[in-house]
Length: 269
Image (tube, rainbow, N blue to C red):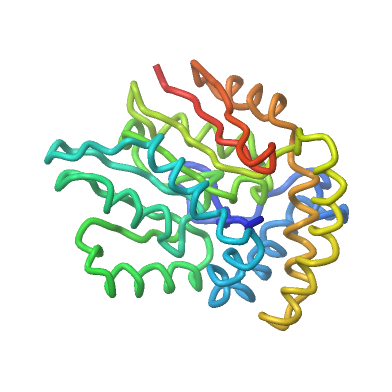
């Protein structure tokens, strides 16, 4: 399994403010809504420089296949036709660089993240790989994107939306910034649907993942939170209903690896 690609967002036209409102969950803990974003930020400040290594270790490399499936669904044009992707919670640039490499000369990506440490990793990697000409890194909050209406052809968020304090607000913002015909794609942990696998998955998640975090990153608690956050995320049918409620059409989801992960899809028509 993977951490989460991150998350982070905020109301249109504003700089990031902490969400306000009733209590919510931070892993298995109940916390004030206003505190969640800061707690999530602390987690990703801690894990930024070991993020991709830990993803490989925790998922046995499977996260790479899941992300390849996401990029195939994005389907950037291979010619010079303009195509602009917004990759939210994409600070390390992993999805963004994959899409740029898969697309043609007209493909550009804005990678948005609330965490400057993650963005610093992404900028450095894009420069090293000679892809920075097609990528823009933006610090921002998913619940209130300081981006124009109807300005992107596709929106992706990989392993990040479960950390958003107000998921419905982020989905509404995704709908707002997509052009008519734009594609929303969300890769996120889901509900295991293979008999016998669920128990093994639970044992692995709550015992092996924090131990790996302690051994590799000297931080078991951050990885325990990431495991807990998966269990608190809505079931795939419920999340699909939230995507529809945000205005999207042709909403669907595809379970991957026995339901460990799901790829959610919706269109702005």
